[in-house]
Amino acid sequence: MFSVVIPGQPCLPNLAQVEATKFAITFPLVPFTEVVVFFRPDAATPLPPDAAAAVYIQFPEPNPAPGSAPPFHLLGALRNDRQSAIFKIPANIPAMQNVNAMMGAEVVLGISVEPEQVIGPQLNALEAEQGTSMVLVRQQKEITTKVLAQRIIGNAFNFLASFASSDPNNRGLEVVSLKSFRDWWTKFERKVDMDPTFLEREDPSAQG
Image 1 (cartoon, one colour):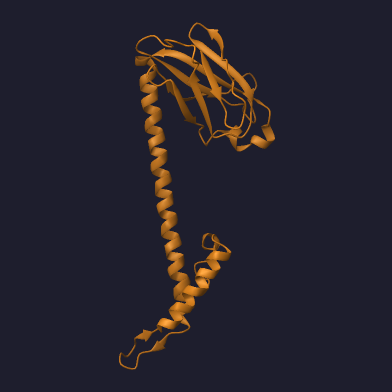
Image 2 (tube, rainbow, N blue to C red):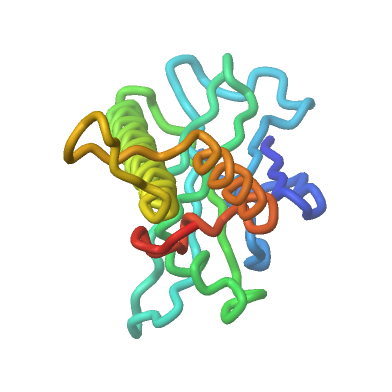
């Protein structure tokens, strides 16, 4: 009824039916950030009306407690009008942060056919959580851009300060020639060409 694709791996064409409304498949842990789940073409009318196929995934624990089973994480759902989807794997899964140490351990992907009224609130909460994560990522990028802009300005200031001279017509005012600015810009461009990420590491007080 369902098939699964892990990017870079062979298609997993058949999920085993473990209960009347539950399906599951296991596969070895490999590095991946998303998974594709879809109805098989031979599933003519896959779901009852007002039902959804909730997709869950279970990763092995790096340090499992005796007698405890790893939790299942809700990824999303398929419906009769949405028969395939690409689901993102949560970034905070411990196993995905230690893939090399746990390579080959078993991952379980499960699908549970549930009434919309049951799974709907959980899906709404998941979407809200994912939306909040995207806002945090955007804010982080804005902060990074601001820091980079400050470092570019600081780089220019530190370089040009040594070329500043007093303006005879305005006491206390220091000026910099346009040639000095062009020299800084040429040097700055060359440095960016050689190492595009240098500003991400640079001490803001360092000269260009």
